[in-house]
Length: 342
Image 1 (cartoon, rainbow, N blue to C red):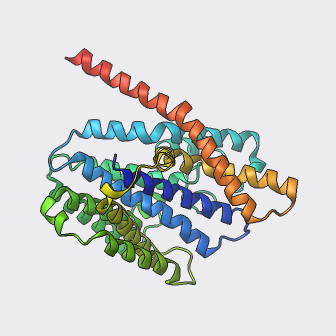
Image 2: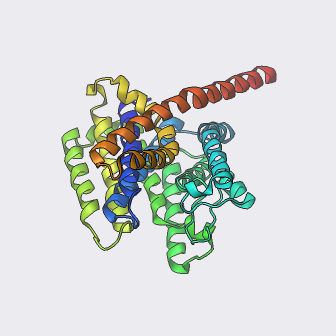
């Protein structure tokens, strides 16, 4: 794995954590904090698009093996957290703000199928699973390009995404699935795919600007994302700024990858970034509840480092006690099946 990509994964996860720590005590979401969380998710999407192109290479790939690996990577921990949220919704619903339980919602959540809650929000039982619905959608469409070259793959995916976005804008879908998958946010994957294509082309990669250019561009675009359309929390303009800022950050890291010193902490946080993303909201809620009862209205100088520290500790345990054993088990099953078929 490219070292800088692991660092960006860690930063993306921690950015979302900080945004939710800041948002949790507020009766109404603050636009600035919402944008901070949106940036973290978009950084994940750009990284995902890059990794899919970079790891599948210039030619064909096995679509069944590709999807198997992606499902094994994404689904088990998400399903575990989803079932935990479902149990909380049944046993202690007062601990959850807007989440109620139904078997239909549980089934749709586990199958990564978007649906609208009673309040109209298109999110699964585990709220942050909305981003995984997009990830699975991206993986499925990406797998259909297995016969194409890398250039054809990226071009067809970008063209397909642009088509369904334009279709959604023209028709104005209200049905949750159609509305959800025709949002412009899916173009973030294409931006990452474009970066993957650049790095696969050695001649083009050598002609790309140096790291200072990308660092400055990333800073400007990140700042612009908080300044445009101040009357709205998140929209196409903010998504565009944050997506391009994420791309510039990724390019900066790729251009200096040989000069980035290995950081055990950074690599560890990158390894557990998926666990951080999935479990942190419940750590945020628990810490806020306990600290408020002990100290009243505590300062953010206390709650932010405390919550981040506990989130990292819990996520590290989840990663080592669940994610890694599950991956080893899947790997062993695959080796066994391969050996049996030869």
